[in-house]
Length: 89
Image 1 (cartoon, rainbow, N blue to C red):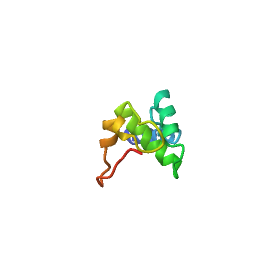
Image 2: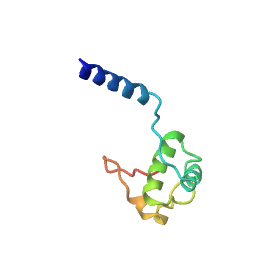
Image 3: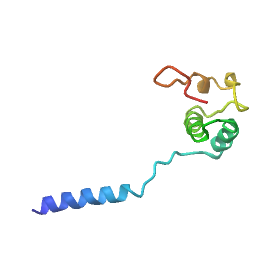
């Protein structure tokens, strides 16, 4: 009986505490600034910022401007999604 109570209490506390946690990406000031510039003209701003942030954290660079210039950062340029299309905006 004690084991069942303990398991239920543990499960309940996990569910309760997870409701307060939000998925947060570790963002550096460098990536935030560069991605805000890169995504300034994006049609879907939140998606652009999300993927730019992911790419920046992994590649440690973001091409200049709002479009193109991907030759400046080969890692950023060469990242692909599961469909083989460019992952980074």
